[in-house]
Amino acid sequence: MPTAPALVAGASRGIGAATAEEFAAAGARVVLADRDTEALTSAVRRIDAGGGDAVAASPRTFAARSSGTKFQIPAMLGTGGGTIVNMASVMNGTANVAGKADIIGLTKVAALDHADQGIRVNVVAPGHFLTHHREAAGPGAQRLAGLSTPMRRTGRPAEVAQTVLWLCSPASSFITGAVIPVDGGQSAGSKPPQMYRQGQPMAAPPGDI
Image 1 (cartoon, rainbow, N blue to C red):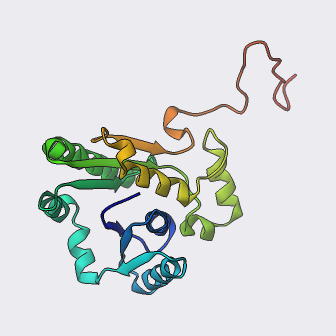
Image 2 (image 1 turned 60 degrees about the vertical axis):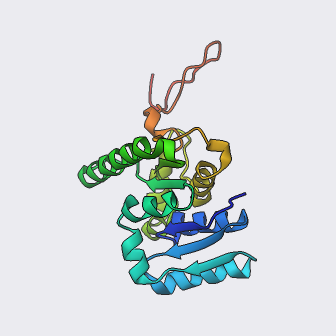
């Protein structure tokens, strides 16, 4: 169970909201931050209605916090340490690749700099998830996204949230500077429609002679 408050950025919906809810359910006091103040207020109300302890950060606080570890680490050094979990992605594309490399690089540098000062810094890299963006894209886009993963489905925001909670818990106390993919096997490679398993017959694909 967390013993310190948890600050969750991008917490108004999707993976961020699920992460805030997961920390609250584990007993942490959660500070939610996001630029969408209306959606953020709704997320705080949901947590409070479920018996959690949540508060929304002001837009000014969020602007400072969203600048990365610049403000987080000094605060943690003054209180005996803590954990930071950054969010990257396993998605490809010019913007994603550049942003992902930047986040991972900064995370590794911070992890090495502060590994002996009680601060751990890691990255979670989600794959295809059923967020509000994908819900808006419709069933066809959701189906294609699921089929592109070896597990043949999209992930649930709670599956990322549970990973983040674990990375902030004593159960992961010897892990820092790591990139944890939560992607249904996508980063392992592409899975063909059929996999050969020794000793088992393999049917021919439709249309083959």
